[in-house]
Length: 212
Image (cartoon, rainbow, N blue to C red; front, top):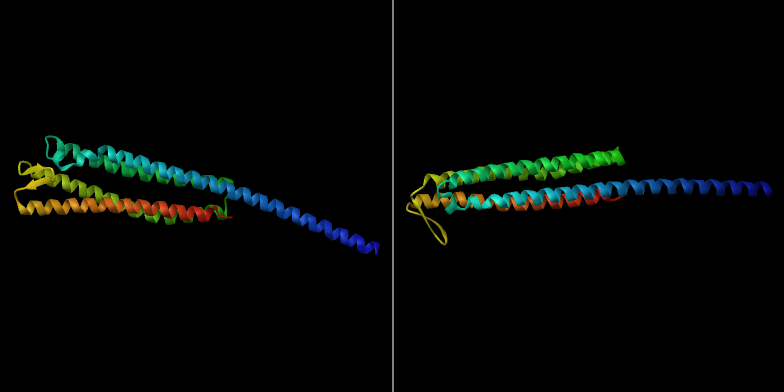
């Protein structure tokens, strides 16, 4: 009986030791998950701030794209400058997002590494597929705005304006203006949808990564 009792005590001690080891592993895993979640939250906030700053820059120069202003002396030059600034803002947004991704990978690698870093990198690649479509849209949008400026500036003296917008003497000019303007508006609306898609993809990917 005494020998059996010693065996039971030994088993109990082993079981307690195993529970303690599992508890330490669970605690370590919880720390890793918390660290990764913190890094993901910071990255998401950086991305939101970059988008807000991009939109602020675009809004500052959007007034120069008003058709009536383009038709004014020096208007076309200011509008072309606004398009160039739009291109610059797009490039700055892409650079800010890329820097944020690199910082996120650095933080995750430092705090957990291994499989977690691989998972984050793959998630960022999926998000970037959405961002690539937005970058393509922005390039096309800049070209469309430039074409609109070129068209309006080439019709100097043949355009008048009322409270509804430009008036053309030639029906062909009116049709061309409507085509160019509608293309620019459609691309701008598409860009908004793409930006929303990036935010949704980021939220979903980061929520999945933040789970244990």
